Image (cartoon, rainbow, N blue to C red):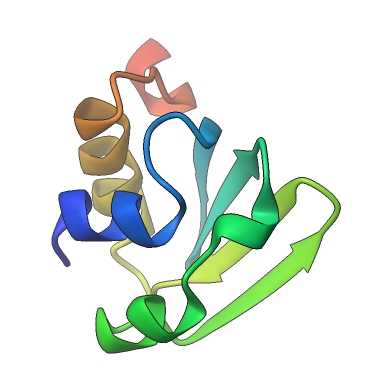
Length: 84
């Protein structure tokens, strides 16, 4: 899964506040969840999207840790995995 395309589908780096892997999901805190491009996320291979307020969970499968790390690098964020 291309991290740059995923970031764009989440509304860009300005929209992404935090990203964290959670088993098979990416848990993202967004400034504006309305900027999510759900169709692009599906085309990228995401299996589902759950949103509640500014927190969005994107179901990506067992590679969530790697995707979160790649996404954090592209967006210049730190993830909880960076501290391990």
